[in-house]
Image (cartoon, rainbow, N blue to C red; front, side, top):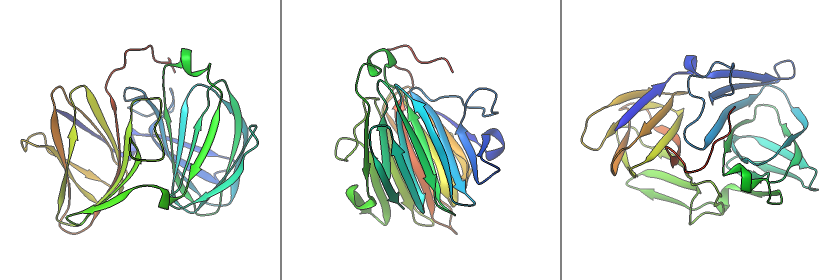
Length: 255
């Protein structure tokens, strides 16, 4: 098991306008300064915060599957497919951009979101018609297991199944507790620590690494196993976890 932790200083930075929106990017574009440039088909991950209400104007996308997860506040969306919608805390917007579409995004003041790009096989993806869907927080299955709250965002029992091989969950672990998550051989976990601090270790209690708010943790498995995510004794730990194959059997876009 390989576990690596990347602090905010090892992640890219970005902004829109005159700083109305600021971004920390666990996975950024070339020359933006992020140590991690992709995890398998997970192509881009930005954590955006709005200091004032601001719209990112219409701009094009094609091929990629783009997910916006609203951590707090309200995010508006309009596109050339005719959609004009808004989603609030806990909701998700998903664009499968296919042969291409333009969209604009508006963040209300003090809103916060993740925008995450997944890369299917682009040669076939660009032949599909583009689609847009959104889902409120209540649409996603959630459970509590020994006090651990698990909200499943991408997966077979959720409203969202991407073409890209992927799973996604939002997990909150109470202070002093831990939560094991299976990781199959040939797959990676990409995790952003949203709140709190704690540690991650393999199920044989080796390779333990500490992690803090804002850290980006990438773990890869050569054989089937489990990773154990544990909160510190003093604070709960909230992480957003994405599982993707470490490698795929199709060519990936050169950024």
